[in-house]
Image 1 (tube, rainbow, N blue to C red):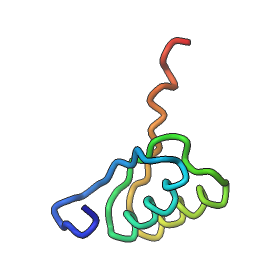
Image 2 (image 1 turned 30 degrees about the horizontal axis):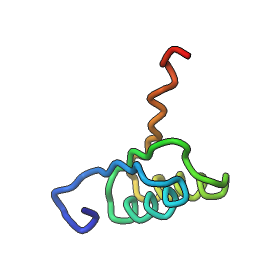
Image 3 (image 1 turned 90 degrees about the vertical axis):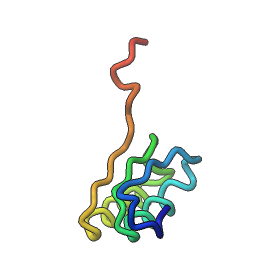
Length: 71
């Protein structure tokens, strides 16, 4: 998917340990990324992800879809 020019964005629903490297790889491949929560295991990884999005000029979103679910 990262090598396919027809793909504009990726959705990452992988184990959290893979979020940072997969997000950075996707952003470096000029893809927008929607990543499932939590963002990353470590704060430094989350900062790396955000910096990669800024550098690539692409969107990085985190899917906190349950935020408004009733308890």
